[in-house]
Image (tube, rainbow, N blue to C red):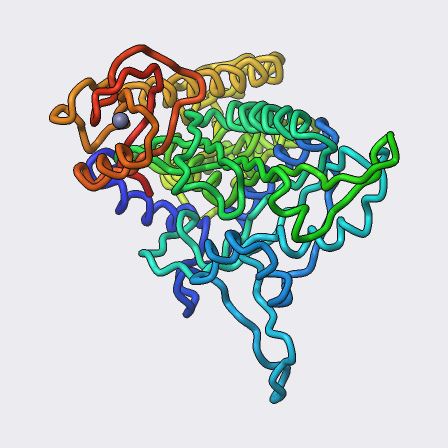
Length: 465
Ligand SMILES: [Zn+2]
């Protein structure tokens, strides 16, 4: 079902694997369940580690933004105007200043950072936060993909003394996200968004896009060079070495719940979730195979191995007595646990355990003494296998196209395009696809697929979420 009705598969797995409860009575708002939340939190701790290794510090700004601040940068508010939720009352009283639920936090953070930064010695400043943001989406909402409350918005904001430094920071952000998505084995392409699709208020936007099983692309990260577009209206100034003053140069970049959606959609299979050992709530589940006459010895043995492995891994032992081993297997496979260890009387006699790999569904007998060594190797194997399978499927969905008539709607089309807005817009109208932007890592001589002008720019167009 994953291949021929992805949408149905996705909705079912969100519910069956207990990622979210989707029954909250407000459109586009969902509840994280314990199992889903653990996956999300493991993913967040990976990005936090990478950001902190790159010198970012975590902060936490308020949810409410006064209207005058939200309106300070004119392009920015134009871009978000239609999506803002407003708080207009405190109890019965009308508020003097309307307060917005942050759709993103630039306008909350920048007036305060203007107070923090005095001199070139305060730069660069690199901060980030993980918060919820609210957007009144009018398009069809979808769990983890299109939300009115984005619950997992990791936004980084950086401040620099020159444009060159801001450009360097964009490159660092690209490296940060590459590391992050590589760690999650999520394939990506990096596109510079066309001007009409950039972040409101940015000089330019660079996006990471992945491809879902149905051939549609999903934007999973964006990086914006803001130049001085915000520092001027927010008056974020610093004293230079020569004593003169300049406005800072800024970047910001973010990821959202869509990362969790990608992990589910890209690695999952017809039997449910398939989780990487790094993010799985449990890395190993132990299922004792119990018969009446050997119950005691099997349980003792299983507990011993459980205690031993718990010192190194996140392990769960399934001792439910009202479920058969078969239904436990089915349950944990659906939940995506990377490894299952089965322990029965025969295994104990032979001094082995049976290990089942969720990703390949292989069953292996392993000597009791060498389980740990074996698991470490298996975790690497699982990661490498999931990563290479995901990249293979990803690359199969990218086609190089030379003529308008050959454009395929279920794929990412790589084409020569001159870069003029008029050619891009024409293409979107004609094909119903979206121009994802210019490939930042690829060039090839040819002629614009629309106006025939010579160019070496490669653009990607696809159906997107
Ligand atoms: Zn053209």
